[in-house]
Length: 131
Image 1 (spheres, rainbow, N blue to C red):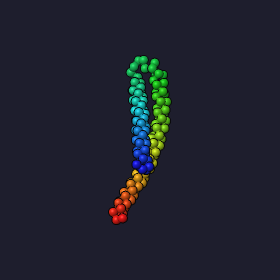
Image 2 (image 1 turned 60 degrees about the horizontal axis):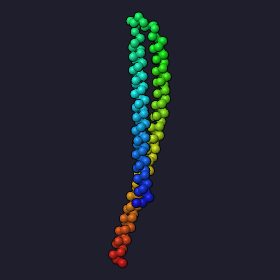
Image 3 (image 1 turned 180 degrees about the vertical axis):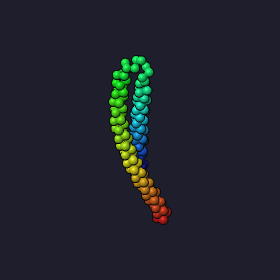
Image 4 (image 1 turned 135 degrees about the vertical axis):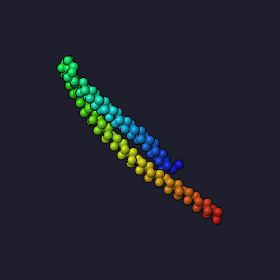
């Protein structure tokens, strides 16, 4: 095998790893979004329970406000983590794209080398018959 063929195989292996990294980052972003949705639901439940029909209503307002504040802090933390994960995903996609281009270029080079070797062998065989 030629050096360029080996290079194409190595680049294919690296591309598989990059694809796995991309899937991992996409999964992380999905998990962060699910957590954010869960916080939204929890906030809706807390706000829904703030009815005035309950006689003990005033006793739990402080705890509910604390829960809402804690959820807001968690939501901001998740938003920051999602921004970081989005940036990592963009970086992984950039690397993956550049590796694909390099692999394609190396593949074309390997194909042209194989074609040149084939052509040289054909010419040598043709000349060997006439000499």
